[in-house]
Amino acid sequence: MYQSTSYVLGIDTHSELFDGMYINPSSPIYSFRTAKFGDKKILILAGADHKTGFAPTKENTYDTLENVAKKYYPKSEVVYRWNTRDCISLDKIPYIGILSSFMPNVFVATGFNKWGITSSNVAANIITNKILGKENKYSFAFDSLRLKPIKNRIELKNMGKQVFKSFITNRIKIPEDELSKIENDNGAIIKIDGKSIGIYKDTSGNVFAVKPTCTHLGCLLTWNNLDKTWDCPCHGSRYDFKGHNIYDPAFKHLIVFKLT
Image (cartoon, rainbow, N blue to C red; front, side, top):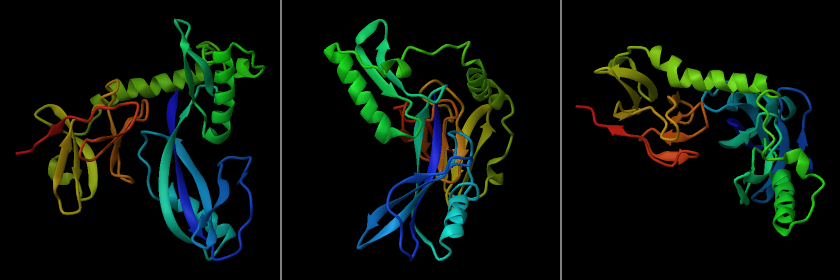
């Protein structure tokens, strides 16, 4: 699987809103729903997704969503912004069932492909049936052991290229930028004494240095200047600019360097 990041806006449209939840059928995909906000409803607009680990910009994420909102609600005002990540399987169908043929009493439910509310209910029913020894007529479609590298060779090849690039190619092409060339409130990977160092400068020019290697499986991290985080392009782990782990599958913090 891989991680996909999506962005969300909470919007006061200053107008009457619909009931229900909607999603458009064509790409780019956006979802529309409402939420209670004080004594009125606000629009919840989500979309602008991309593979986690690619450096996003405000223009192709939050600004894109805001432009969509203004298309239908010209007087709209953004009151909240946030983003989140989801696990995506190779064939875009969740893995629900036993974790391994060697561990028949350990179950897994993952890869919901952004359909967590419905897929979690499906998973609860399938796994409950498996524990009770009952047949579930839908379990075959979500078989957690179904991965066939030949059948999914195109998607697997794309993932392999990304992982290989993160392990090797990015390391070779790391620019020899000097610390002074990094602008305030931005980050980059530079070379110091032959070592790759992840540098972030805050708005006052204070420097935060980390080892930009994911503590999960060692992929080279990418600086995300939108959220001020170090993101892993391989499996979606994330760290704040101080090196603290904030998103799994990694659970250890980054090594922190002190610059003299």
